[in-house]
Image 1 (cartoon, rainbow, N blue to C red):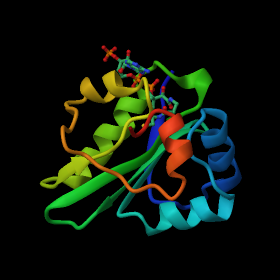
Image 2 (cartoon, helix red, strand yellow):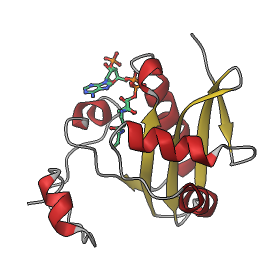
Image 3 (cartoon, rainbow, N blue to C red):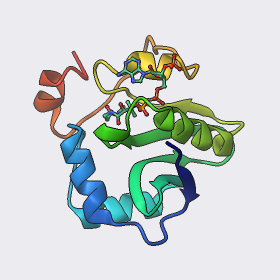
Image 4 (cartoon, protein in one colour):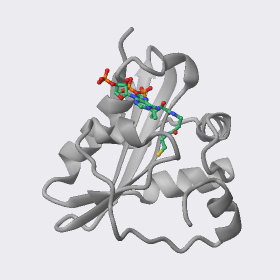
Amino acid sequence: MDVELQFGCDGVDWTFVFETLKRVGMAHFSPEQHRQAFEASSAAVFAYSGNRLVGFARALSDGACQAAIYDVAVVPEFQRNGFGARLVQALLARLEPCNVILYAAPGKEDFYRKLGFRKMKTGMALFPNAAARAQQGFTD
Ligand SMILES: CC(C)(COP(=O)(O)OP(=O)(O)OC[C@H]1O[C@@H](n2cnc3c(N)ncnc32)[C@H](O)[C@@H]1OP(=O)(O)O)[C@@H](O)C(=O)NCCC(=O)NCCS
């Protein structure tokens, strides 16, 4: 099984992005909001198997010092084939020389640890939906 990576948002099916994020239990908004978020990102990468979109990831960056990765997802039937790692590595290559931060979904920390990430001891977040995020295990 192989995939091709596409950088940039040309031809992306935003309803599929929304459905995938919902399906894998990640924060999801409307397809239009996901389009806005990906298109406003500094880097966006999509994995295709043939014509089928099977994963994606995006990053914000100031281009010099600091960057953050969001919305890393691989559709369940394509997981554990190395595609998630390829998506993150593709972003990291484009984010050099920045520091890169992210917050892992609870239980996904080891995926990022294998890519070189380490837990931050002082990371903090201000979520509008703070109670829900605490219940999901993101914050204390
Ligand atoms: C997390 C996710 C992106 C990983 O993508 P993937 O394509 O399945 O992962 P890969 O096959 O590239 O795995 C790379 C390595 O991480 C490991 N790994 C993958 N998922 C893992 C997990 N949940 N826990 C621990 N290790 C994991 C793999 O075993 C592999 O290890 P190896 O290099 O020793 O073989 C994918 O499972 C997913 O989309 N999950 C649902 C959405 C989600 O939680 N995204 C992360 C949000 S922060």
